[in-house]
Length: 345
Image 1 (cartoon, rainbow, N blue to C red):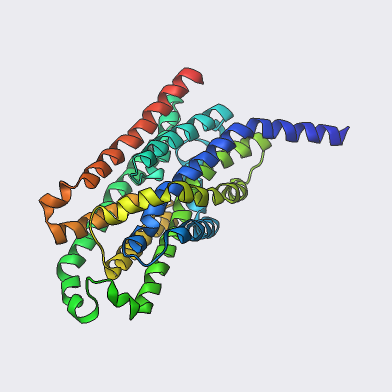
Image 2: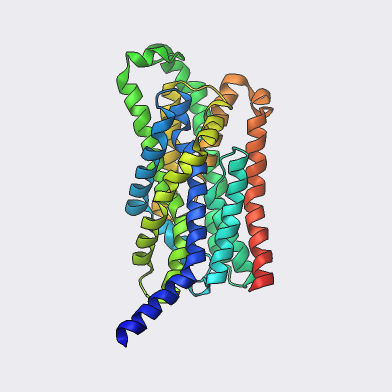
């Protein structure tokens, strides 16, 4: 009888979890498509890595980053904005659906979108509808980080490209890709930088799919250790990033890497290391979900201003599309989550 009771409990648990888990994996697939660009657009744009290699390398490094450095961001999303006990099957499903739809639309447009911003605002929309939003966490910690870090990325890259790179250019590198044949160390460094970015994505972005599922699972099991359940959730969702990279990654990577400005390998290395370091800092110090695609995009824009001028860079069709999608997608996630929670919960 005890065995039968246990089987019934297990069946009931997975019956409740089936739809949210499917939506979580759907979200992870879309994040894989969107996140490929900031990880590998620099290397791909510089022509030093084959497109067919990107999904596997991306997926492996995302998983490692999630397991080693993803805990703090997961705790923020799983309990920091909306109380853990409010992650019911319906609320969790709505949150994940809203995030997934916003990213899916961005991927169809070929524009890398911030998974972190869509996730935070979808949870915030649900929390607002349930009168459970942690406004201090959102307005005093998360939102300021979203404005400050892209600005830091932009200013650092602008300063480097205006005053440091010209001094180094004639001494250490050229704009031609031909010299990579004689400088295999630089080629290896560029690939390593891309892997470093993928690791930082795992540290920050896997939590977007794993944290809501973990909070729901804790509620359903009566478990008290959220951290342990988050680990299991990451093991389920992180491999889906590689699938998304394979399905959507090439289109998004091409747009981010080659449609704003041509980059030489040295610039590409600097951009990758800069944005990944900023993201890891936000992930491991405060557990703030942060937009790597915006850090990466603003760095490319700063380089574009130096090379092509302010007017030409901001009249670029891809840049305009970036800013439009970056503004609309998180608001869409917030509004849809709020309306669905109000109507259905």
